[in-house]
Length: 333
Image 1 (cartoon, helix red, strand yellow):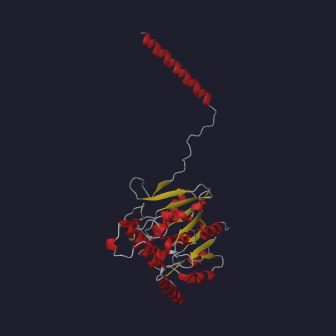
Image 2 (tube, rainbow, N blue to C red):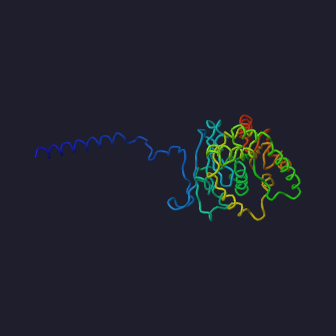
Image 3 (cartoon, rainbow, N blue to C red):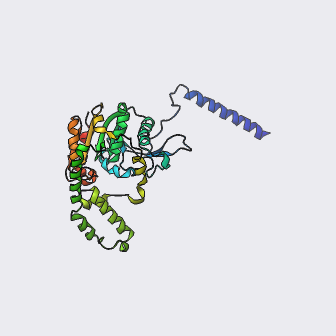
């Protein structure tokens, strides 16, 4: 009997204390919901969260101004571009993502098209959410950035195109001779003796069947650097490749290009946003920058910066000069 009475007494006491605590909190401005903390990575749903394919998104940097980063490919992934903006992480927030079909964003082949890549940017813009985008695109990512700007010009604040793939497709007939000259120069560049010396330096000239897995990886990256870099000895800074690259995505996307092609150089003349192009003078896509130098004469508002002794991955070849050039481009109004 005593236990029941004590239980009731203590229950009433706790009820009183709870009522007192509740009363003391009344009038205080407590948010109904805390803001979501910044996530290092997350997944962008393309429909139903449970059943639809998702796009892998990664956030990098502490700044307030947001910049969307578009990797090349098609079928590559984002991590190689992080070093391009590493020095800017305190000044900007960078949004990277693996494009549909790429490493961390698996998609059925039937859903991989040129237009779907464009729409993924718009979906991501809404999810961030941002009214207008500042976009940095590399290689085919520069083409994708240009395609998005052509379709959604009012949603673009700035474009910075790094070593862009062809901004006119197909190449105009009157420019075919320039294209051939650039290709021949590149073919000669591929024969530079530094490549063979680099392989000999590490004993990689022997039969591939006698190479270890690490040696095979090194050989693969030297051969990759032969095409992508001016300074072939910087191959040690390259990462990824092989199974991380989903090469079939390129064909799936290319097969759905617009039938009439594109001329993004002409589209830029109608845009209300600054366009900067940063290219290496030894880029295999436009060796000596013969095409782009001719094309931008049509659009004086485009700022072209050519970095000497740099190939397709500019920031690996000339990191300091690239950093200065990128900062200048970001400061354009």
